[in-house]
Length: 137
Image (cartoon, rainbow, N blue to C red; front, side):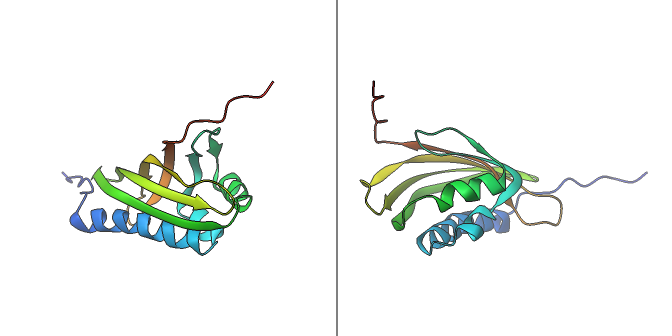
């Protein structure tokens, strides 16, 4: 009888996921949206603050390419947890786009990997501390 071994979430996995937050900031600040979107799974979902969810890596990339140049992005209080091939993380963020007011808030992210493959983002939900602009009539 063969014993099936379930993947274990290790300290190296935790370090890799924490590193993804750092890599995301580097990619955004460099305007390297292809690398940033490449951190998502092909079917990933991104929910920007005060906006509709965006489904699929190509759509996430197209959305990001329409943003003004990023002037600042940092993550605070990064926490990650996982079990096997699924993990999630939370953080605070500060973000500044050219011509827009600075933003700060929190995010929840979900990661997945196939056995032997690198971690990918499968979902991210960003919550801004800025109020949503009132609807115009």
